[in-house]
Length: 260
Ligand SMILES: [Zn+2]
Image (cartoon, rainbow, N blue to C red):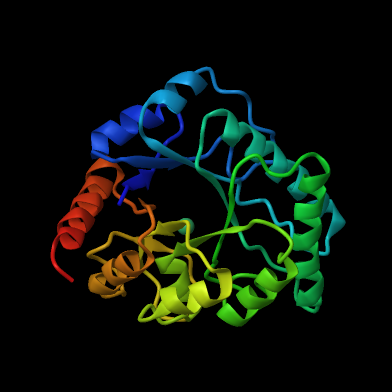
């Protein structure tokens, strides 16, 4: 099982080495901005390094919203990031499930997701797996609660869609971690990546506040059990820089090395 961390994008390979990580996730542009990613000069080095790469799409992207001024640029930006992520040999592009505004029909949000994949298909399809990530907050989210996730997957039935399960988001979003992998896979058929994070927020608090694995409100053994059940690569998106994340990675390796 490949284990790594979300790192600063300046030199992801050096960040991987500093954490003894086999995988890294990073942004290709400002996560709060709408600028298209620039080609990376280190693309060849990244592709050939033997470290598994994942790219996280900007947080501003919301392809589900009924607001045209957000949805249309979101679609375009997502495809731009997919192209740039493929250029560095990334294994997947992670994007949040998004939401509709209060009072808007969630059904239209799911259909907007379908249109996003249709839009990409018009230019040959996404050039790498797009992994939709579950989110922690909001009452109108496409991928917070599993009933919504099931409707999202129905809407995307004609397309190849991956899933990234974040343990902090699931717990803070109000989904019990015990048995969660089976319940998710019954909907998605797959889990491509685990974001292994503890949560500063309480169960069902709706708060997206990551904590180190042995801190926070989640029993760390439950996070380990989710990883074991999923059998997917793992990225920690935890605080504390190199030391904090290296400790989280070491903790997971130690726990996963033990008999279940
Ligand atoms: Zn995450």
